[in-house]
Image 1 (cartoon, rainbow, N blue to C red):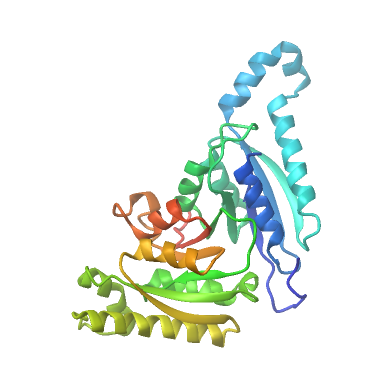
Image 2 (spheres, rainbow, N blue to C red):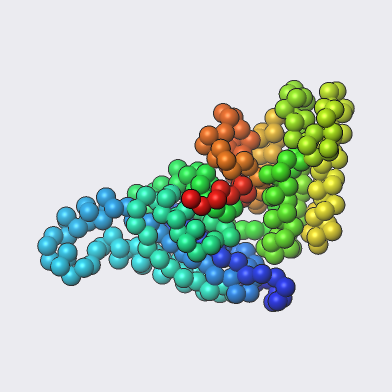
Length: 309
């Protein structure tokens, strides 16, 4: 499926990581279901760790080493070809590559090299190709990637839940939803969660959004602030041509976002997170980390990219 050809819709560069596992296959199917803009390039990669290469070379013996062949690399190429074939009916150009090294680092390095707009990984899985475990790799990639990361748990792309709170990170996620063509036909719910048990933290992001130093203190004031944020987000998305509506929840942010995603059959939760600290170094129980770990649907993490050094 492709987005209708439009010279004003920019093409995308997508990096899809696979390891041959069932979970990685879901990521491939998800990429296949998305309507990419014309001229999009999808780089399908798999990572073979150097330890696996060394072990395979030791088992293969001198003759295989002399020929330059490796059963591990050969298996990786077969899996990549299978994934590429499944994507051939999209409008995108598909390229494949076998990477070597630590999976998380190799994926991030490749994303930097190709100027990726998006990285897609599976949620977990241990494939036959290598020791690439996407459960841990996805967290590492989301922590260090130079672009948004889509952690795939469903193989379809139909409805989105956007977490908004007025913070710069949530606003960046909103702008992405409003500008990327892959969200053009999706119903989008801009949801803000009023954590009325923690009024000072609940109000912290909102105070910067509203341009006020007066923090809301009562439950009604807190909820009203979140309604304001959600309504304005939905209005901006609608102005950008999206099918958007606002919704306000009350309670623990991660818990309520996960529940709302389940209640509305959302296929993807989109949320921003602070890039300077990274997902794994955020406060214990952080919203982004908990949603990423526990969501039953896909999660698109939009983080503040760090400059290359």
